[in-house]
Length: 146
Image (cartoon, rainbow, N blue to C red; front, top):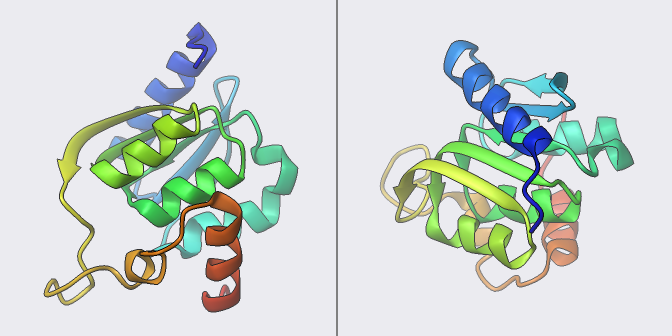
């Protein structure tokens, strides 16, 4: 994991942007916001991956709530850094294993579903998935992006 001033600056911009704007996700490279989305669940990052494709490689992603699904999508996209105000230990572990610099302000045991009485459906969908490529395929096949 190679920590550079550029990654740190981009992660700081991700933190500032998520705290000042109503975005769910922001993608940054070289102190510039390449893309951002609002929305629930995994759809915002899926939309950005579809829009940016290979341009995601080497970026920093700011994700409002980082779970296993988002972490796998960040690894799939070859990002270099991820910042999140709230993240699960599993998500952080997935990023560390992938050699991706990550920062989280608060650790969550797991991401809850909308009604707050169980596991997020995307986390549940990926319970037995261990690779970024497999996670992307499962999510792409099961998440409707409008």
